[in-house]
Each structure stands twice: as structure tokens, then as C-alpha cells.
Image (cartoon, helix red, strand yellow):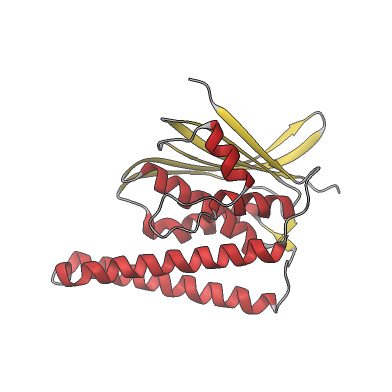
Length: 235
């Protein structure tokens, strides 16, 4: 079985509208929070007397409240600006994206993390972390109730040029090459009920804003890997 690949690069393409990417990610994030709370409410009546459920519910509410406070703080700091590029730590942003999605991690999904200690780059922390979180969410959806989610970062030097690579891989159902091309080119209908279909398309936008590339390696029934590649900054 061959593995399909699709690339998204800022070179030779019209630059995406940062406001569109930011709005898409914000709506996507709020929708996920609403879905998480709706599921909790649905289970309350059936499991409220279970002390383990109550403890899990309280932990979920605490994490959700913290997420909402952080999101509100980031939006306030943006102060109406479209893109806010500061010195950001890619490893820390990726770790933060994992933490945001941890409440949605099924008990039989194994999480593997390995970070390479990347130096900081100029970037928009809100957009980058949200794009990483979208990729993680897609991976969890593809795996369902069990599998392995691998999150890694490293520096790669080829032909004298260094790039910072972040990978999010899953052992889910995979995608065909045709579907990957369609997803990278435009928003598509999500496989989720009431989904917005923004994930891969918006990830591509955020990468282009930062001069980065996104490569997806996948095939039906094979592990899917989303690979972000950022150019290292010259000293």
C-alpha cells in the first residue's frame, strides 16, 4: 500500500487572510468546548451518584474553565489586531495544544510525547497553538476509542539549511490521496455531526502565515502523520 502525500506551502500561493484563519480557529475551539460541556450534561443524570464520575466531571469543568479564561485573555491581548507575532516557543505551544485536548483523550489511547528543545521563532501563539490543537483533534477523531497518538518535535538540517519540524501522528483510519488534496485546498464537510470542516484547511492557512509548510502522509488503514516544517531564523 502506498502512502499519499500532500503539501501546503507559502511559496507561490496567495497569502491567506489572517482574520479568516483566526476566526475559524476561534469558532472551532468554542464549538469543541460547547460539545464537551453538552456531553457532560447528558451524562450527569445517569452517573451523578458515581463518585468517580463526579470527580472526573469536576476535573473536566476546572480544565474547561481554565481553557476559557486563557482564550479570553489571548483575545484581549490581541486588541483587535489580526496577527500578533512575538518570540514563541514551539515546543511549549505544542505541549499546550496537547494539554487542551487531554480531557478528550479516550482511556485506551496511548499518548507518546518527545520534544526536541527547539529555539524560539517569531509567531502568533494563538494561531499556532490552535492549529496544533486542530491537528491533534483530527487525530483523536480518526482513532476513535483506542490507538496511539505520537507528538514530536526536532530540528533538521539539510543542505546547510535548518528547519524546525513538529509531527502529530495517529494510528487511525487514514485518508486517501484524493481526500487529502481536497481537504488542503478548501474547507470541506466535517465527518462529525454539525462539524465545521475547518481543520486541515485552517491548519494550511496558519502555516502559510508563518512561512511554514504542512505535509500529510496517509493512506486508508495506515497511520496518518501531519508534519509542520518551520524555517529556522538566521542569526
